[in-house]
Image 1 (cartoon, helix red, strand yellow):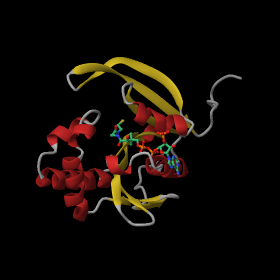
Image 2 (cartoon, helix red, strand yellow):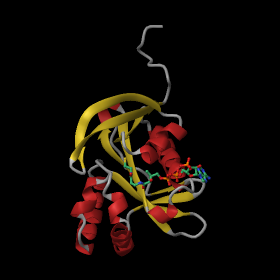
Image 3 (cartoon, protein in one colour):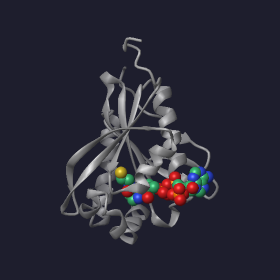
Image 4 (spheres, rainbow, N blue to C red):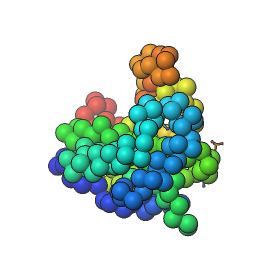
Length: 190
Ligand SMILES: CC(C)(COP(=O)(O)OP(=O)(O)OC[C@H]1O[C@@H](n2cnc3c(N)ncnc32)[C@H](O)[C@@H]1OP(=O)(O)O)[C@@H](O)C(=O)NCCC(=O)NCCS
């Protein structure tokens, strides 16, 4: 498929996704500071985000990668209150193979309210509408909350990569969840 930009705004049911604005940096950094211990368990970049300037640099990097069709990272906002909740994004994009991966995090205060499932559902819908054939979600086997999202949204657990990464100083397995446009591979003999 041809490389092209994702929409800057995506409406889901409970949330709206917006391409990052630099203005969100102080709030985003404040959330990381507030929730550092929880977030760093599964997100390696948290330890490298030490100052507001690091956050600003991250947001600028997302704009560059957006323009290069490599990363489409969004802030998640409550549709009712417009409160910023966390991030969801499309990365590891293989345009030639019509495949991409989704990643996400939300502030602990907003966990367990269905916001992330809604955000992922909305972004996934956009991926398929844009022409992607396969969407992947990968997470640590120790991260049951994260694994619940693809399970809830009908992804198939397709594999486990044994001792794939070192997280918090110990090896962990990676779960790979996938969803395809059609459950049957078109080139597979019947
Ligand atoms: C992983 C993470 C994003 C999951 O977020 P979450 O808040 O649990 O996800 P949801 O918002 O979809 O919440 C689902 C829960 O809300 C409940 N819920 C409430 N209202 C709901 C609604 N309208 N729709 C769907 N679920 C709803 C569900 O029952 C579910 O509860 P359960 O966990 O007891 O089954 C979050 O835990 C997180 O940010 N963790 C730290 C960072 C991280 O690990 N990121 C992923 C790295 S791979």
